Image 1: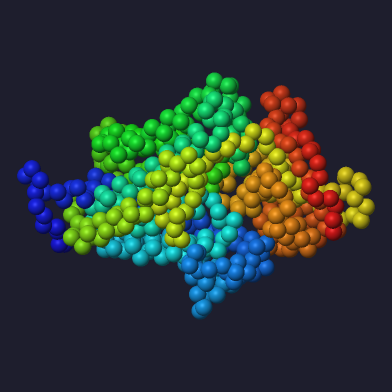
Image 2 (image 1 turned 90 degrees about the horizontal axis):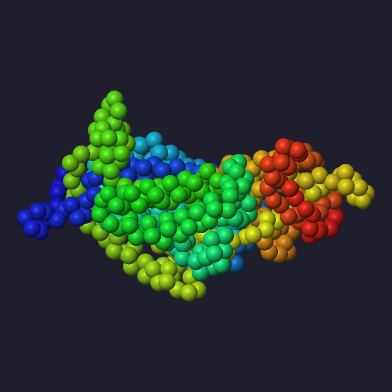
Length: 501
């Protein structure tokens, strides 16, 4: 292998400034982990996109493509020879899943250094093609984050070369924007974050609780204040330490990872938390991981474990590879000015993309804390006389609360897009075209929409009438749970859509 012949600095080569040979484990965690999340994203699109955005979906992508420009949102579905169809969409998802699996099982890593580039860039392009026609169903910050990270990790390379330091450095900058951006938007956006009461509400009002959310909500006030303070410290201080020498950077990354695992255990945020955990590994060195187990891995030692995960010892990179990764780093840095400026603006943008390729974005979450949980409940009846409440039955969603006796589910990193849209809808006006179309589909007994639901009370039969009510929800107390067996208490607030057929 050709190696880079360079000058010296204080008697030593400056090659180590471009190589990060102590990050082989981090590289493999990033490659395989990000690929696994791409598999999840393509799987969710395969299952949900046709019903939501397909040819006969709630917001048909062909109509959107016809009335928008490829200049602002490039997509292969805009090409003349590959117009959108549900069949093509599913084929794209299958290709994306196959590419993802090839990295997860390590096939791609067996090739030369450059093999990660075409595989990840193709996954990035295919998923970008979906996101850019996904409208509001794909308007979540973790879509842009997955696209950005997928593009960047393409240049980590296969184990034939040492991990490129500049690419790992840029991934740390991505973690910085995710964490520090979220911390700043919290401090600017809602007084509850400044008076340390935000976590009094978070676990109960978050978009999609999981089985442990109620337990977390019922912790005492001092616990919630500590949670809020901890959030500020982790998001506003720890990201800066990622750029410090080792072991400080590794310790800061571990703190961030632990905080993200807490969010994994107490909520459902698709792949946001898992992706943040993965990119935080860009700051964790092999030496630090080695030190955590007391100087050696039990029974089999350090080197075999490194080999299994893709690590190699004393690998040097060729000139062309170092130049390529340096050029990519410089180009990405050039796109970083607007996201950097955004972090310090009083009107900071949350989850914003500054270019059509979704590279180097602005991130943030929970700039405004919801304090009361409201849920829209869709009900139908087969009776022509809707006056009796006993004839009305609710449509149950897979993730969002509905039945008060049903325990919240763990669904992340899978993304239930319709459930999330219903949460946003309850916060604002239900007079959205897509929601009206959803009700029409339910009245028609549409099978594609029924597959997105957990329970169709009519087993595919079209209801005679349909209505929508709004309720306030809260977790039951321990005494209420023992007495009733419920997970939720709810109070009806009114009828949003009167019986219609």
